[in-house]
Image (cartoon, rainbow, N blue to C red):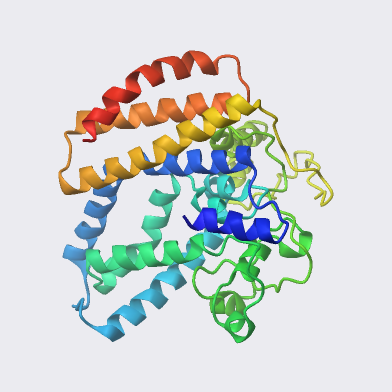
Length: 358
C-alpha cells in the first residue's frame, strides 16, 4: 500500500518512481529473504535465549519505559556498527552489496536484503542478551528499527529541518546509497544519525546522489544479483599469491587490493545509464501477476506457520517452491530461454502449495 502511495505521489510530481523490472527484482529478493525466515528464526531465537539464560547481568522488565528507551537507543548503536562492518569487511559486503545494487531509490529497495544478513546481524545483537534484555523485547526493538529504515528509502521526502540533526532521514539515507565519491561509506545509522556525527562518518546531502554499486551489476535476476558480489570476492582471492593476501581479500575493505595484484579500474561513472531490460507487454503483465500472487502466499505462510508450526518437511517443501519461483521468474525477467522450463512445473505445483496454506 505504501509503495502504491509513493508511486501515485511520484506520478503527480511528474517523476517515475518505479520501473517494473527493478521493483519486481526487489520484491523477489525480499521474498528470497522471507522464505527461509521461519526455519532460521527458530535457530537464531534459540541462540539468543541460550546466551540470555546463562549470561544475563541485569533483570530488565518488559514494562519499564526507561528500559524500552534505552533498548531502542542500544539497538540502534549496535546496528550502526553492524552496518559499518557490512561495508568495511569484504565478506560481509558480499552479502550487503545486494541491497545497494538497486539504481532506483524507492520503498521497494528497502526490502531488498540478502538472506545471510540475518545471521550476521543477529551476532551483533547478542550483547543485549548479556545485558539482560528479554528475547521478546529484543525482537520487538529490532523489528521497530528495521521497519523505520524501510521508510527512509524514498526521494519524495526532502530535508526535515531540525530533525536532521538527530534522526536518520530520507536525505541522510540517500547519501548512504549514493556512489558519488563524497558519499561512499557514509551515514550508517539506523534510526539515529548521532552515531555518524560522533564517529566521523556523517555527510550531508549536497549533490544529487547516483544510486547503485561502484561496479554495476547488469542484471535483475535475484539469484545472479545475490551471487555476483561473492563470486567477485572468490575470484579476487583465487588470484592472490599467498595465504595472507587471500585472507586480506576476505577481511579487508572491498576496495583493498594486495600489492601483488593489479588494482582493477573502479573509477565511479556518475553519468552511466541505469541498467534496464525491455519485455513484451504480455511478459511484463505475467511477471507482475505472478510476483503479486507470491506476496500474499508468502505472508500467509509466515502467518500460518507462526500460529500453528508446520512439520519441517512441509516448511522445506514451501521453501523449495518459493526458491524455484524466484529462479524461474528471475530468469523470465532477464529473458532467459531456460526459464520457461522452470516456470511450467512451478505453475503446476502452485495450486497444491496454495491448498497447504488454507
